[in-house]
Image 1: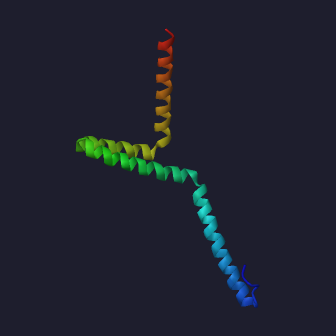
Image 2 (image 1 turned 30 degrees about the horizontal axis):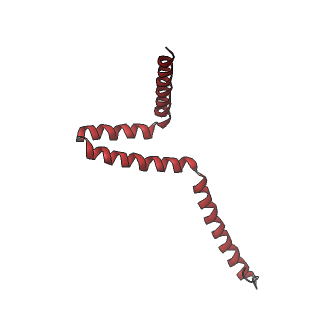
Length: 101
């Protein structure tokens, strides 16, 4: 712990430094708690990696279609994920029905 400020000038300087440190700490905590942004950043990274791998394996027209598809997902993630969830539920119901027959 530092010494108590000896005059008003030191007190103001100490106050300003403390405010700056608190602002930096709060900004860092805010970024860590922004789960949506962190998920989006992680998703963007994964999509970019997948796009690069796809580009290496398939023809350029197919890779371009994949890139356009990823842009659609990035622009409208909720409807795409809802559609995938509905598809998975439908497949599970079909599988369950077939196994009970």
